[in-house]
Length: 117
Image (cartoon, rainbow, N blue to C red; front, side, top):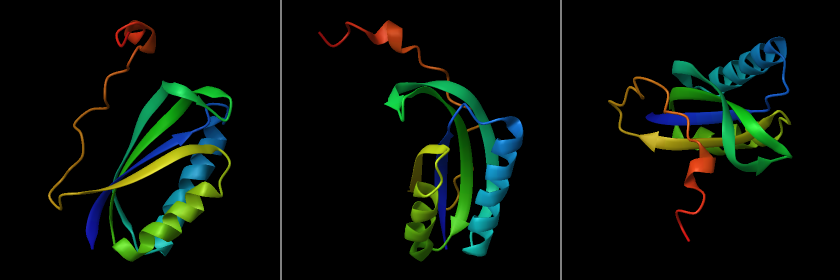
């Protein structure tokens, strides 16, 4: 068993009920695959660095998981088959990792324009 950080970006067009239903579906699938959800944080709706599926914002969720590495491909396939999930990322972390104390600060991409000229 290893520890993994999982970031989900869900379409901002989803209602609160649809989000809750989707998160319940994600929880059930993770538990069915043998994963333990240690932490689930709502990081709110944030501006994306670039449009994804014609959306410029996304609702971010952070999950800290304990699971076998063999289940990663199944979880990735599950996420890819759900339309409201714009992006997902799973990263292995140290077994003692507890996740960030607070969500990352919002980045204002307009301020970055011209920096790389």
